[in-house]
Image 1: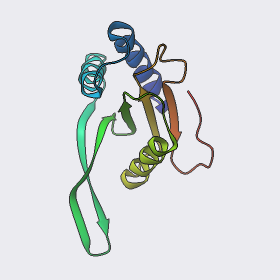
Image 2: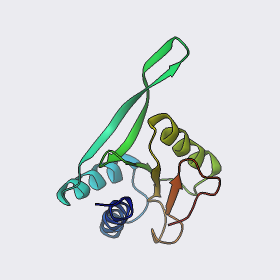
Image 3: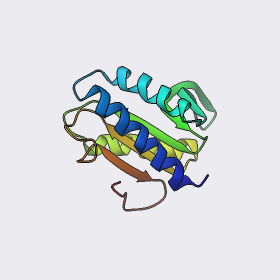
Image 4: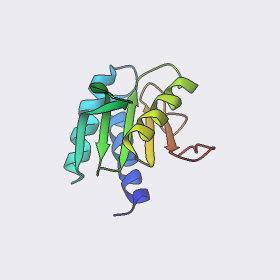
Length: 132
């Protein structure tokens, strides 16, 4: 399955979860439901993956956690905030760089319609990040 196909399945699952639950819930609720939806689709998903940071001779074992890693190649960062801000994009881009992963999805479930500003695709190594 190609990266775009995996991304489309993730988006379909997120829309299904958002349609069922609506906005205004905790991030952890959307996280658990999206994880379940993706695994039921037959995708290989890690939840709360710990990725160490190496800085010189220092190795920080539990430095950050990726919300969802899908098929070992798409990072999904889940939010439930009033609006996505530049720091949310920077956070996902940092995760992509540290994990050596090319594509990520930033999903904000706290919107009226997920398609209207709740989904953003972030690409590692490219100056312009695209909207999905």
